[in-house]
Length: 211
Image (cartoon, rainbow, N blue to C red):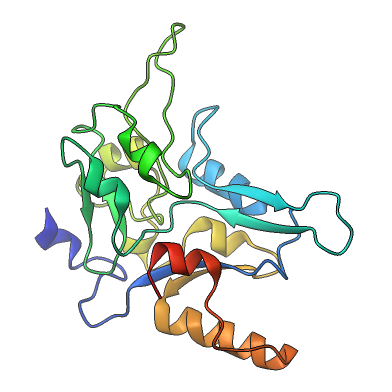
């Protein structure tokens, strides 16, 4: 499985690890990102791989919105607590999982600081199915761009050389996705233009990547 993944999309051993970043000064709470995600992967009702959260709602001058999903953490806590080892981390840092191995125990949800794992209800009694989460639009362990991969995980845009659907749809370019070097360069450039400290680490990065 890993030999195939090493040859796809951004997954190049010489490439900086991937990262998500949402600029809360640019996010306008339009929900274009989460709608694009649902449309691209045909997600069932109740599954939200990406969501927009508003902080300090209603407080004038302090209200900010931020787009949140799986941050593909460098030391992924979800993978650490999974009792069946259904998670795997690609060489480019994308954290994926095998739905056919997942038993729906929910440990990953308790461990994730971003609330990324989602659990579809499989029947009227509310029993949980296999976990679902953001894949960075990189598919899963099945054959790349196969019908089975699409059925279980949605589009594999990374294998096609495209950025995730959420970042592609963001109208204000608040949501960035790509190699850490490229994303960091954009953050620094924006900070310098605003006269801010370019060395300030985004809060979500401290949690996800430890830097």
